Length: 359
Image (cartoon, one colour):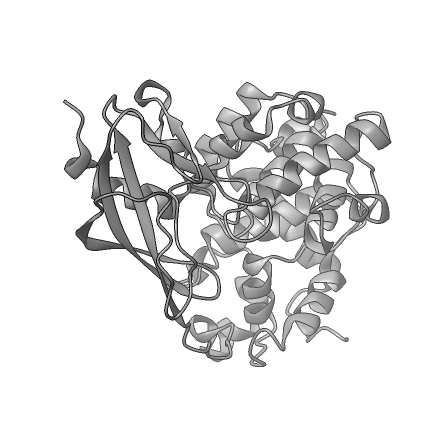
């Protein structure tokens, strides 16, 4: 892939962006700022890895508080590896894509068991760890170890599409955009450069209303000159997502305890605590956890997963102290934290809680 001609040669483009980054880098809790990096302070691979896993399919704003809690509770990969699974899953609740949390523990334990508590410093070694794919491996290698790896997320794809005025729609354009990004990756300061391109996309070359007038690459941006920047990158229209339905059963015992169950490790919300549910399908079969006088709440919890929309009809019941469910466990009121539930289960709680208030 031969990059399109620009007003500046490739080395000048990279140097210009690094100079911009030195003055405008975002202040992020997992980042070593450029001045500190130049002074010899090295990023902690654990913090880089943790942030990259958390940031998948999630915004920086949403991740900040989670990152702070995780690094306070588990300040090192060894501490996380020794953590209780349920505690980690509870702290992850709300971030979504819960397979990431399960792989987080697997990866931490593999680093401790197989690598003496040190992350591999090259892509090949990082790819051998649970839950680390091509993007995450490249990001850790570049940011934590200053390897000259090409790091391409959604921000970088957008910047490359505009810089080179690429009209091929995503995802078909991924290979082309990655090659264009690789051509710009410098041998010097590749970790800072990787973060600089992502910062450029997050703060200047934004999806809507890009701030082209203050962009360090404005003189070389083919899409700005063509007037097409706001329309790029183009994307293939997504297919309409199907709707699945189910029943969620919210029961409270006479002493205020709630009936909850831990979902199977595999599948959606694997290993997470939640309300007993039926299957999630086009026509779900009711599956109450015990015989009771279930009342329809008259409201449904709505949530969107990656590939489908979910509608959960909520049924509630008050139960005596000797109620013996076929599945799940009673969680005392004092030990119950709605915040430990995944988002869809928290939505169910918020709708049902008032009808089961324990006085």
